[in-house]
Length: 89
Image 1 (cartoon, rainbow, N blue to C red):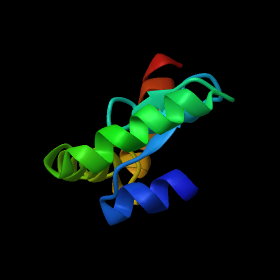
Image 2: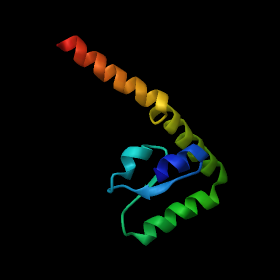
Image 3: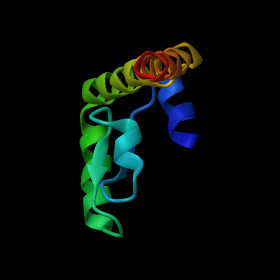
Image 4: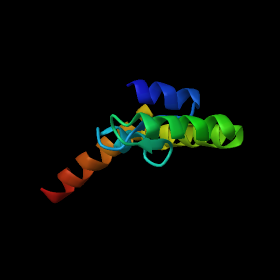
């Protein structure tokens, strides 16, 4: 839920590659190695030194949220699953 809230606010995200977080954020975040402070520092430096990239990453996060995690999108996915199942029986 935290990632969805951050994505909704259009903020840039830094998260880990190997904890399941990458599946939520997709390519709308900077992915770093777990327990690697150097990797985190490099990601922070990248955002701090490039405000335009930071804004673009935030916009990408917001787009990803709207395309994949709104109630309308989730409802449509469930509806499609139910329709596929009912048509196959």
